[in-house]
Length: 168
Ligand code: URA
Image (tube, rainbow, N blue to C red):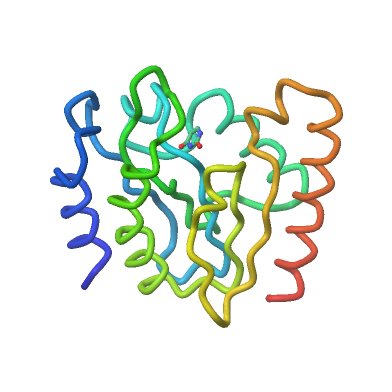
């Protein structure tokens, strides 16, 4: 399956009720040969409007922190474990995550990343596949809010930059 076909499936998805409260699905974006995939929780209000992942406040903070460490976000494949906004941006339920996981697995099968970076607790539900390295890091929205988390997040992004250099 091509990424375009997969994105079309995601945009038409009715596997759980979340589509009813969404403007559109947010499949994700990035090069299909990206070495690194970032996985967040679900699109927020800005992402729901734009149809793109991590473009709101947390996304801008993420993009800035990546850039400060020499990482251009356009090099990464960026997506979420759940592809539609949730009501009030609540944490997705176990059923919603289970319904959406096949899309993430299909994205992983196409992109074949070397490293998958899991942003925050919900993204940790991502199945672990052999031959892929996983990094669990703080979600940028938590990093924005708490100084101690921000310091840890900045260290984690610096570590990601080192791994990226080693992969190059
Ligand atoms: N938070 C996420 O987890 N994902 C987004 O796309 C935006 C904010």
